[in-house]
Image 1: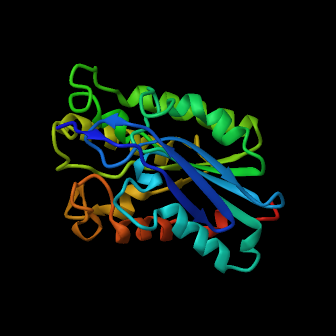
Image 2 (image 1 turned 30 degrees about the vertical axis):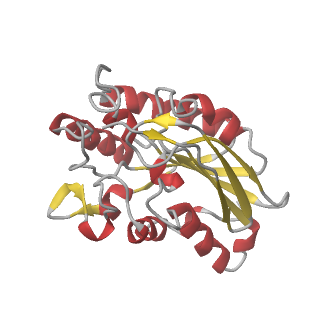
Image 3 (image 1 turned 120 degrees about the vertical axis):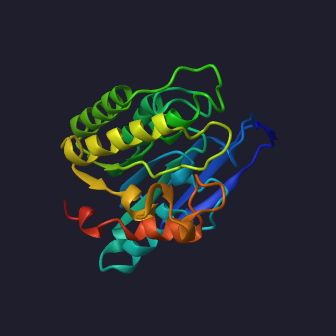
Length: 255
């Protein structure tokens, strides 16, 4: 059931990056929403932009979201200080539609392509596109796999045209999420979208967050040890698993 949320503001340091999130008031049954994000990085840094929704922003379910884990791993390797990680996740955000900030398609330009120093972008978005219809937006039509993969293809084309490498994150499972957020049909679409992300070749690499987080005995659910309790958002251990699933070889400062 939807409930009113108060404005929230978070200050988070990711390696050499300070991300300032400006909150907005919303009436949606998800833990935290962020209306905008600005980041400041060292002018000599190459930047990784992690782009998505609450699964990237942190969603109130973790003290250290996976981009922070990734930043720590990059900082710890030789030459890692030359790379900064920007968390451009907005809780409640969707790829195809606005509401909690501009849609992913709209904000990709100013928050990724126009960001100074941006060299790589990791896209993990689509969960809310699937979950909102019939839940947060009861009368909205369902989103199809075709709609999502077309949007991913657009992002990939725009990133490549701007000289960035783009890595696609598979959508983690969310069976058990309340209020109509999950349905068997949404699960079918999620699996079809993930199959496309893995096999299409649209992305320069695939980060398989679905595989990192799912219960191998019940792959439409998060592994219990990674579940924050709402069956949608990973907990601290889940975010650590996501951050550790990223191959650091994808981010070479000399590229």
